[in-house]
Length: 430
Ligand code: S3P
Image (cartoon, rainbow, N blue to C red):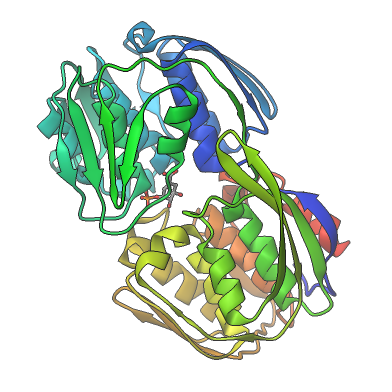
């Protein structure tokens, strides 16, 4: 990969990963045919489809068009093999919430990265609700086996702001007959589950930091038009902001306020960004985003903002290297339990391009503006899609030749990433 001269043009951002997973899962639990358009056909969401097929759900997938032939949650069958979630934390945690109420045995396994990701944050509350769960280190790590059954409601205060935890508990709560289940978080996490449950006909109450559901409701099939993933758009927003002479438009991007922390940060840093709202797709607002290169300044990112941009922190770290002054990212210790420890992988890999980033216990400190250069650097995604994409954007502003090991990880959330790089830079990536 080499320096880019300036990005120009427009691209349609592929479907949102969080929403694509949920559309398949809720379709599998609902009665009737759920039709999904602009589905993200990335490796993670394909793992979700494969797992639900193993439980007897008929799912037709043709690229970004998916039909899920739901027969209600009681129609899910005990899988005869092991459910393989690949690299997907969302599949693992949300599916555990569903399986907690199903009267059969199943076993979940994933890749090396999944095997390191903490699961007691969901297995403990699901056990309290009545599910029988075991796994490595007392149910904290895969392989995990679960025998679901009759559940009772739970009033749960979560120590972490995590939509995966909240969703798993709400999905179990949906199956706790006539009982109330609520989850209260320290900060509000993404609310796609709450919005989509409503689109599938369920009632979910939200008040402040609490979401509550009554058990025993049935879901009705819906039509889901998946908005583009703002977490994927973020890589090109950053590229557009830092590669001189750029001006690009990213179409059809989901701008759910629980996900737009990256827009707030770009605005605080002084980016030249315009948002053209386009209405909403299946309870989710969408917009076209246009960004041009401009000078940036450092900022502080903490507290409530963190869950609204948790997946964007690697690319924000790169942005910060190109901003004047200091950027402080704190309250983000969740970074350590993502696909990789993203504090370590960001510091280590950007370091190979000459960037100096100071790691802290719960984030990083970055002083800009820094010049990135390398004589034939070889950087690695460490198997983490978002680290891979961040490094590909870093290469666009690095003097010298950069090669990226483990670029195939990018398929997890953005299979057409390099095609889009080519479309906007006019350069083939090799
Ligand atoms: C997701 C929630 C976030 C996010 C992940 C997708 C979801 O994880 O990092 O990529 O779809 O609910 P946490 O809930 O663990 O913060």
